[in-house]
Length: 150
Ligand code: RB5
Image 1 (cartoon, helix red, strand yellow):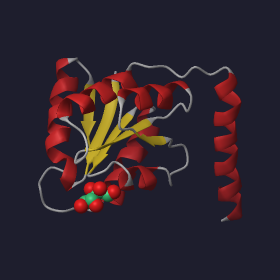
Image 2 (image 1 turned 30 degrees about the horizontal axis):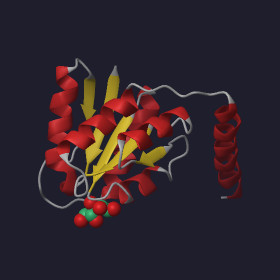
Image 3 (image 1 turned 90 degrees about the vertical axis):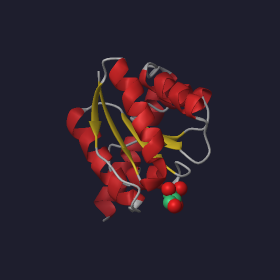
């Protein structure tokens, strides 16, 4: 499995922990930074990760202080469905119902162990399709409509 990951300065420690966890599970990790505690703007990291997720057609992990800003930024990019998750249950439902392709987590809000559970749940849960398929198709239709308007 391949996974793309990125965080702003608020998330570097949690990112390092998750990279280690994933590598130990033989996951191929594409780390888009940031790599130091110097402040960076979360939209820049969101863009790098989102573009790579689309290129590789694989899941992504975004981390900022809350998981909110970086998810908002990623969701501006057509094809991205980023879900900010505070619990493993949210991560499961984001995959099963929303076919989310990025999980976004808040380094300042979560214990390391909870973050690990969220990521593992997200990566190993499949989209249920069925009644959720038409709703996800409507998300794609919304994207198309917005693109046509601009
Ligand atoms: C950075 O201080 C912080 O604003 C950012 O990590 C994030 O929480 C924004 O949503």
